Image (tube, rainbow, N blue to C red; front, top):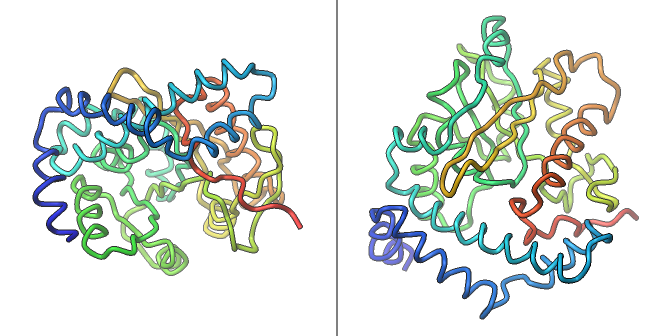
Length: 286
């Protein structure tokens, strides 16, 4: 069934021009928002909690913009199955990769912290040819082996190293001939992990995973925030800001606070582009 869905639907759709796929995105928006109401309670609840000062009309308008953006992300993800590396670079340009180069010349691996904001998939797809470091990214394998392999193939077409999250510790401890730039999501909900940092994020008490901080301190990896900006429909830029250049001499929680605040500022500046359908606040402090 998975192969049937991929070869008879997703793959043919991915061969269409993106401008045509955006017609499907407009229809998909109506289905997600108007008909199905995909996770509507989650989206509206998250927005109300994050922006208590906004009126109900403003919250609903934000949700409309979010659902339109989400529909675009879905068809852009389908398009990625056939997108060439050259077009991927055009659609996700690195704005200032030169700020990473001094660390590469020192032989230092680095962390690039992102959130589920704008097209994180295009970031993983297109960053490797545009930087000196070998790009790598952690991912959660899908339960469906067929689609897991197809998505890995699509994401890895530009040469990024994809690491299952359960293999993160083993990979970090391995010797490498080239420094890596490890892309790490900062806004997953750590449902079961005991290694969390509690803070306030978007006006809510929030558990933040400590993976970036623990690994950066252990392996002396400077930490950058990777801000993905939407230039126009289907085109993005990614800009890097150094959050911590000397992680081994930071206090507990310091790095986590820095990347959490950086993501929060990005979301507050343009809320519609974050993944509000994510159940980010499932975990409550006991």
